[in-house]
Image 1 (spheres, rainbow, N blue to C red):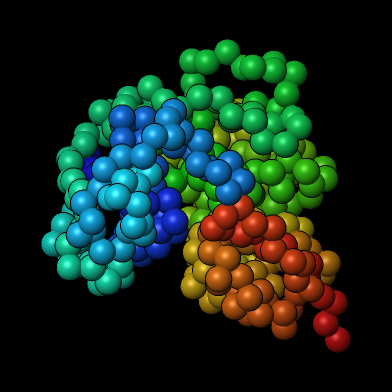
Image 2 (tube, rainbow, N blue to C red):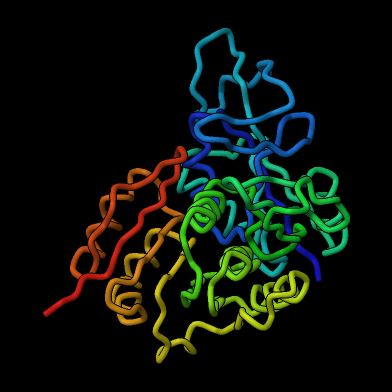
Length: 316
């Protein structure tokens, strides 16, 4: 199966606008690239990159900020799309969302599954989350053999821990006491959050996604991590009769808002919901949608994203 990789350039201040536009256009995964072709990662509000020198950018790029002699630090932001998407529709959506007449540095590349996975394997390295959780690509020695280690390769389903929203959720799971609890990972993607919950003591985990490819990939990752006795993979129409203690949902603000009453119905009284995939300026709207059923905690930020936790109220 082939995939399309669509990329354009942005200054760091506008990354969230470009990332949101790519996601709305149908991107299955987003990666930030340094000009020399190496992926970047976000830690807190900082971009981690192999060099910080500014690079020349045409002043005609209308949504890039500047005014310092035409020199700006810049990033290539790349989205992975299903090859069946119409490139022209994606291009028009991006131009409309970013309010530009052309897309700076636009590049489109067709990738086969194997080529895409091998390309990212060159740069994907073991990553720690919290005090005891590591995510490692296959073939690497575990940095800490006594830690809780997840084997996760880059693939077509979103979620290897490199994105801030995934990291926010992994850190919550690592810090929570899930021993003996039932968990739903709603919008599971690669299954990384479900696997983390299972390895950190959850009694049972239901991994739910509406993307058939994500379900296949999640099942492969569950088997690779030897948690198939604990994790069940389900389409979204299946968990109607389930009752869980925790729901973790790393998707997008709009579907999270729509899912608020459903999540309330899937939890035991006092159950917790953990939401991410939310930009900071969307946090109040998402939290408000849940307040009829949940006591919502203040958001935890990793610019420009947030995680919000709520506890189900005992309604009379």
